Length: 316
Ligand code: 0CH
Ligand code: SF4
Image (tube, rainbow, N blue to C red; front, side, top):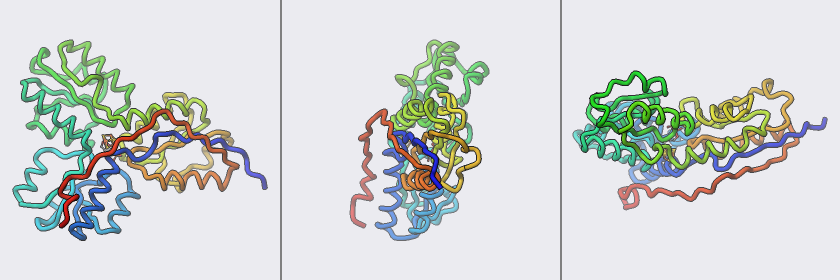
């Protein structure tokens, strides 16, 4: 039986960013240096395949520091942690390595700097997300106000509208965030902030690549986890860019073949925490059913790399 033709538009850049790459390396190097078990507070990045793989190598994933023993090294995830977490690790004299992405740490420093200058902080982010918890947790409880939507801006109660600053989560939708920043600036003209927002280069580039392929694809799949903020944003960006079927898949077994019946073109991308091997798996699944032509659509080149912390570059 002849297979129907299918054009696959592969977004580039896609998948691992420099912060994810560094965070995974930190766990692997910690296992090499100290042996198993090494504890990791929260999923190092939001991807089950990555987490399972590291667990097989001897990493133990816990949600709170209290679950880790005093005498084993602990690593903090790429999303960042409130100040209280390293403080508790120090109080317990634990060995810890912070795998917070340097671009998240930069936002932490911004928040602290504005607070030290006497400005009240507003964070644009998603409630309950570990990065939001970590960034808000750089300042004392109640010092950072959270806004999730442009509608929230109308209701936020500030101390002094003349003395305000904002920061954002790094993995938000560029377009939605622009709307929230505009609402903040309209209500509080004196508000201080970053040049645009704190959305990182990887989030920006992955959303731009999706915008380039979504309008020409009958459907688009984002390889990524349901708890991955940046991956979920890629699905929304695809839908907003005019793709009538945009779906998150963790791996090939998640593909809803019935929903894809009759398509002639498909866009594929991957969130910043999704390994390329899962993209390959998805492509292979399509190649079994279709006569596939792959077209990579590259909208940016990336050459960002972050060093691992010095403690891991030194021998045990
Ligand atoms: O997109 P989120 O923040 O949910 O996290 P992820 O999927 O683990 O991707 C890595 C980003 C980490 C912090 O920016
Ligand atoms: Fe860092 Fe951006 Fe990757 Fe988050 S998505 S880990 S901020 S590079």
